[in-house]
Length: 72
Image (cartoon, rainbow, N blue to C red; front, side):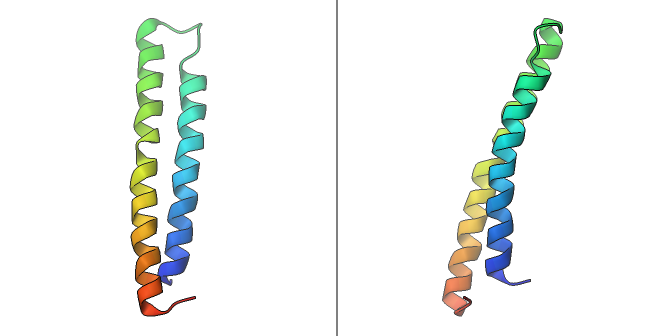
């Protein structure tokens, strides 16, 4: 797999983690649940959302490597 392809996959994973974070936050933080369950859902949604910057940073590094190697 080329660095360019891996960079694209990492960008996709970054956006997917943002969407997953929002979905988890809304679905696990419902009003019918206890305060403890709702708090856990909100924290888990934030945790998943924190993956996005890591994926984007790695994607940028792999993209720069691909450019340095002359991959198109």
